[in-house]
View 1: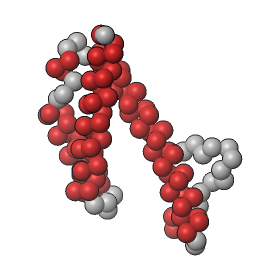
View 2: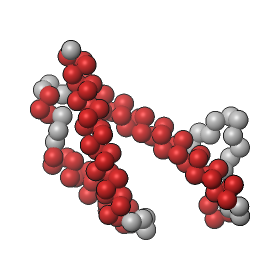
View 3: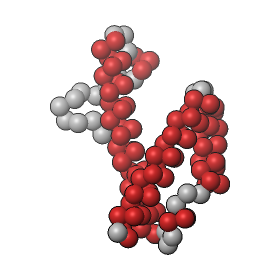
Amino acid sequence: MTIEPHHSAAAPPENCTTMQEVRHGVDATDRAMMALLQQRFAYMAAAARIKQSRGQVRDEARKAEVIEAARADAASRGLPPQAIAGLWDDLVEASIAYELTEWDRLRG
């Protein structure tokens, strides 16, 4: 995880003793997640460039596969699987919308 230079490293959750430390860790984690989302959406842009037809963008079988993988991974990590599946449903829908916008932009 890359932390911006003006921020000190966050303490691991198990070492936090104050809410300030917890919030610092959450903020650092959010920045790291945003970087990963940026990478994920770059893959969506690549998919829009590669797919030959707009109809290929929405793939319900792939969507179900991705959401199920997230649900199973969440369960294996002790996270709430249904909540994570819901987040991933939203993420995949946002990704599809972004990919459609990119597909249209590229073929303007």
